[in-house]
Length: 477
Image (cartoon, rainbow, N blue to C red; front, top):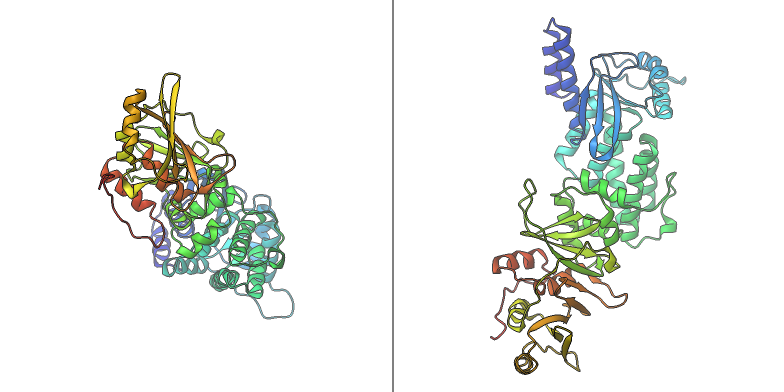
């Protein structure tokens, strides 16, 4: 039992007022559960130790879910077993203020064993102070995404009886399973799958086993050889939203593995709060893995209350997006129809476009200059950069066209994207897609006039792995 809970129970006993006693106990129990899942929002009822009315209702507003929590003063397995008939329809979390009886050693089923069987069957999770102390200690000592997901999954959908020994065994098997999945160890994964599915309901067990499958397949494992699970289905945007929301940190390898199981379209459907440190980590590890059809820049003023970090990755309006200072660059995963409505922007002239292209010397091999219903196209036959050609200056004067309506840029990493400056959109032709990082690095600086400081921040955020940041060069140097 954690010292904080022990002290709260002592303090509660010193109060003559039952209302103060129950308030202190409920607050202490809430802290125990929050140590396992910080995302809960508790609601205290007016009852305490009632047979059918919960003491606390746990809610997760972002998930539109709730779970009843019943506080029980004793850890007597026989007494708790008798309670099962009143609680089974709620599938609640039961927190005992004493440690639950240890398993008996007789040949006949002990009350503890019968309690374990009944709670597992009815979807009730019985946690005692030793179990929550063990779980919070494990999380504090060496937090990892698998442990965090397991910890919060137990609060949402745990079942059975969890004391300290059971918690340690379950977390150890889960960590070994994720290490085993990366190393394609079927035995370690199979053992953990069995334990996970025993202690979690189908929804929560499915999220963990699907994440295990992701790590397995990312390591080159054959999907058909993954140990059998009772829950089926592929990793989806709900699973992704959950992982990004509940984990507090993860290794670079973890985010790389996750990135290989998703796509940009799935990211656009995910429910991700702004600001999300996990989304930043996921994108940093997968800039060259996640593919995109194109990007569209939209003027969007800073909103009161939004995070101040810029640039940052967000998910908004059904798209992955890069949020900057009063602008957002939306990413279309497969089709330009995914973009939000366009802004109407003034196209740049030749001088302005050359200035935009200066960072990294972004090559442009075709330019379309327009005026009214007339257009002049200037392009390189062999695909070389034309922006520095002096003949372009003459074209502006001779044809009296200064607005650059469209251009084609050669992306860093290969491929070309068409730029439409009035809609500030860059996209590949036909069905072409590109790595998000390559597309952003090449096309975004051409779509608007950014300050040097902002360009520096963008380039650092989008820096390709293993490539040093090179700064900026004037186009005419």
